[in-house]
Image (cartoon, rainbow, N blue to C red):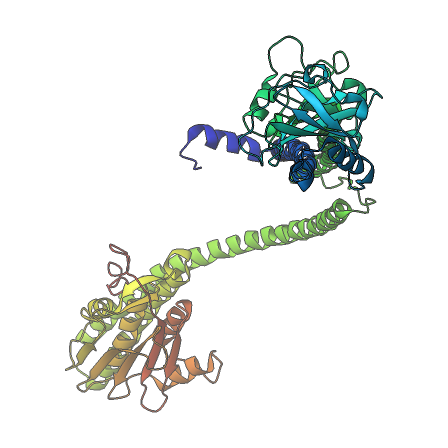
Length: 620
């Protein structure tokens, strides 16, 4: 999201303004994430475990149905095979009895309780492995007619019933092809069926229910041959099984369970019969793993959250307390209280930070003391400088005023004396005195320019259009009495970083060159780019007649005035100082008095700046 959303922006500002709020926000986010993950795991693992219970229950019901289908198919085949025996061709009852007795006693793979032949026409038993029931009416038998057969390969099953010795049997009835109108009944002991049932859940039980709602088989013998559900209505789970369906339900209708117990059940039909296998399990036992898993997940989440709150609470309180203490100490130091104690005995990172801040405080205090001492020294020096500056200003004003007045007196008196004599030698001496007086006045003016150069305002550098500034500065020079030629070549679009006094200093140097030459003089000022460094602009001043005083050139080259090495004027010194203030360099060739000035280039020109306006200052 963006700060353009006002509510979010304000909320973020509130949170980020405090470490405690940021910590609380982070804790809340972690709490929400852990809660969501816990709920997701709780639901997902519960669903997986529930699905596992359903699959195991359904697999058990399916396996038991397959076993019953295999058991019934095996005995169907036995009944069909016995019904196809040639002993029935003769119709001899004695032979058939002997054959059936042999099947009763000789079958090892199964338990045949009785085998007998029923005449469907007169509804009596004609031959049997148990001679006591020969001649008995079908209506007196435990199972009831009629059965309908599709063909001679069809075998029908009776419902389980008990015989005289209390054994529960199932009759497999097959039509006899060789003896039309007769049926072969093979009674099979169901003892092995009751022992087949196994349960995937502790406390589970199995019921095999027929279409009448009667329990035909069960793992509990007492439940066999009882009703699966109350009333005459068939249980829904049995109805679905009779339709050939298989599946799972968490609400079976069953009357044999413990009072108040809840059951789940899986069901599957037994092929070729009207039996439905229903595998039951107590819901409490079936979902015990689910409950335990969810309990463990919830417990782990609670422990994790409690541990998180404890850890964050303890560490957060420690961190926020330490930060608050450091903030308070920093504010006291900011207010000038430097004897603030720090917790330097802590062994952790906050101890390191306290020790560092203590060291910083001591260093800062020492630096402040040094600054105070320096300030006192500077105040003393400034006071002395101010006094000297005031004295210099007074002396400068007095000197300029007196020099100007004295020059006026000297030149006036000289002109008056010259008018009173016709001696040419005296005229020449007086003219020399007059010129010396005017040179003294000019020296006083240049001294004033140097004062301006040394002032804070005029010493600041600024962008300057070089060609225009130089042309303007030299255009008003007094060239009377000479055939001097001054040219400025190039620099129309060149901008340098320089003091506003630079054009004035150039003009003073050119004027000094002109003043020392009586013949025609040519001064060329050329502005060009430095081939080695494109950030530097080079200015050449070529004097074709050596107009610069040699003493000035040597004095500036040496960098100081001495009793044996001093200049005649201040023009070249003023140019040297101006270039130096701009961060440039001045080179003077002592042989031909050629000047080369290197100035730093500027990238932009400040429109309306004072550089061009001040170009002619000091030339008046």
